[in-house]
Image 1 (cartoon, rainbow, N blue to C red):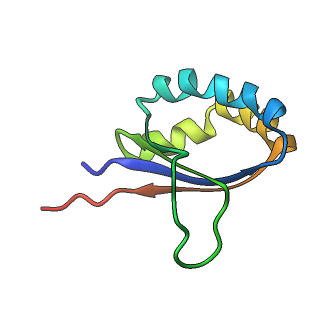
Image 2: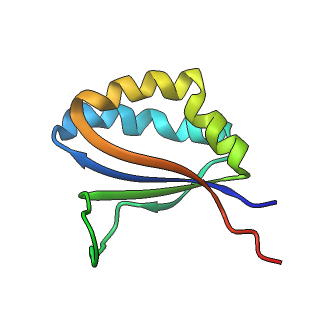
Length: 98
């Protein structure tokens, strides 16, 4: 079964206000079996537009990745993040090669 992923790109304009969002995420993601594959780090934008932070979170499958996003816990945490950042986020099914 193919894994599910969140791919996020974020610009934070208030680091202090963003910290509570980051602090709450590990417990939320753990509940859904999510783990960070990419969390920040050095990058080079070679095509198109980029944001200052990039995140990839792996989940057991697409349905679980979507359920995490739709969970009451994460929906509440979005409200913590939004005043302090701009984000692009997609939820995508991984490639399950034969």
